[in-house]
Image 1 (cartoon, rainbow, N blue to C red):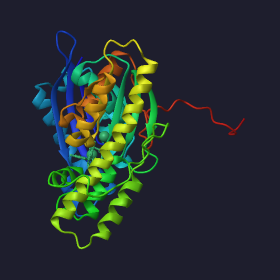
Image 2 (image 1 turned 135 degrees about the horizontal axis):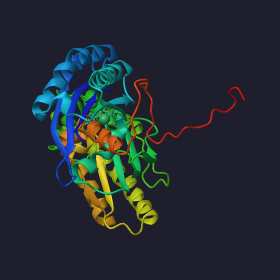
Image 3 (image 1 turned 120 degrees about the horizontal axis):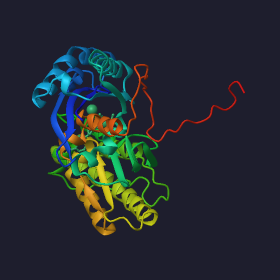
Length: 354
Ligand code: ATP
Ligand code: FE
Ligand code: MG
């Protein structure tokens, strides 16, 4: 089966064609990602209205490019998958309507995909690993530990109680006035810095519950910066390095605890796996700390290539492929959802009409 995937939940317009090779291994035939970073740069964040309009303008060309790169026509497809949430509703509607329209016009199946499911299934796309496994999702909007039991069976073991880690990186870059945006800039400046110069907190370290917290760390960076004003280049580098070390330390502590629970719950797995997903997984210092924690626990760490860590449509097409193969299709009436927790079960409504 060949699946066209469409992703428009935030500020990337993306389309991809995914199938399987003769041995049943997942095959990415194309993976087109058009980032809107430039459109939003002047506003210091993603502007929903601008994002929606940019998706409208880009989506046709991006889908055509994905089909052309893959050497496939719409007639070769089995299904179209599109992200239905969570995310910015304007963008989600563009992707969902495009996917539904293509499916309806060509008589193809339609599959609605949860964006987080796309991230969660990525290690099956890249490395073909078996269920169950653990996922650490660290992106601009999410910081979660997920147990992936099977398709559609996700258990959230921990989440951030305030900021996502990517958000903390973004805000740190901003408050230190780095010339470039985001976590990649913090990592670049941290290379020339002393991670021990500033004694920053290690949020949640040692806590039993598997949650995260990063807003206090961000505040501590601001206070440390204010104490040494005006900032020389070396101060900025040291602040970046100290922040990154604190974040990595906190993450490593949470993950070590999660791996212990994973081992206790599944003592007989042939190959226990922790997979990282999300843009922050690009950070080398964080990867190093995660590798250490995994080595200690006897767990294999899967860190997908950067193009598949950040937002992309290959992960949506792949989730669509698994759903298509399992017969889990959606109707043309499937709604988009700005909020859509991955582990959400259908809870009974209490106190409404009964
Ligand atoms: P979500 O998937 O939760 O909707 P998103 O689209 O913002 O959110 P991604 O595109 O996966 O998430 O990742 C973007 C985030 O990754 C940004 O917050 C960015 O600062 C962070 N990031 C990117 N590169 C690095 C790096 N080298 N070190 C740390 N953080 C990084
Ligand atoms: Fe994402
Ligand atoms: Mg993004």
